[in-house]
Length: 352
Image (tube, rainbow, N blue to C red; front, side, top):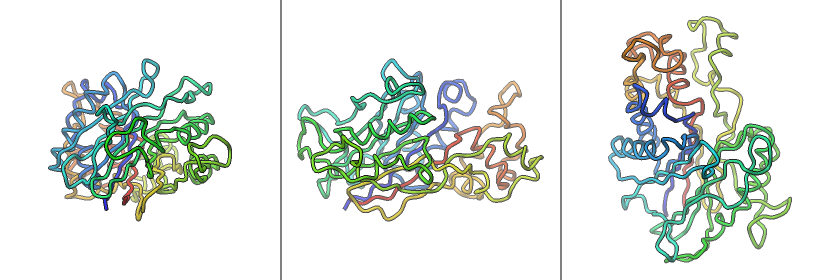
């Protein structure tokens, strides 16, 4: 049986200000690699990479994962809408034999990957928005295909339409022009920042309703037949909300859980295999714990630029040395929230 440990992560606005023009470019890549190594993930899916540096970011992250894990990895990057959106998606996967899976290929020998051909919503209409991306893998021991998607929904009610379109993607259920191994896709892992809270929104029914006898779903009451990996919150609160509530940093909470906003909007929905465990990765807790690989990577981040200004928002509010101050939850939060992302990654342990 192939054990898939998949991580989905919205790395907030990962563009030129974080990559290339930042004193923390290399340190951020190392931090991402340390999170992958800590979770022992063998697939990583990221959202909110800016297309202007998407290829460079993906190459660097792949290198960072290899260095942190000591494993061989590869990657695939695609725009969320070609020539129509600033964001890209990145897929990263372990390539050595121990992974027990590889990329599925079609009858032309090409990797089965790309953008959904359906129209997806933007903030203002039901079309011309970011599309979902997909990549299909095949296990080497059980000879099963599984498709992984990545999607960043618009932050309003139009997100529901995006979920409907993902469920309706033919690529979730079959490989067009299949190569060696056949075209059936019995399993799917739907990753993304859905901008809908799974704990309060009923609109995930397009994901959770049963698959029709002849997929893909095309009518209300039908769906992708998936289950959410977690119902825990993934979005971090902001500096202003904390200062308005608690005042000075010294008064902020000591528990890392208190820095998470009540929103479960990042998730992995799975179907077709056994999923014994899904969880939100407590990156803040890892930063606040001396000796962890994530803490070591966090300590390497620069607080200031060569000119003396902030390397990232509120960075100069974190006293030096990082080796001591990051043990405080408030400072661990500030470093992660403003140097890395306002989202926590979600991990799914999945067997097929």
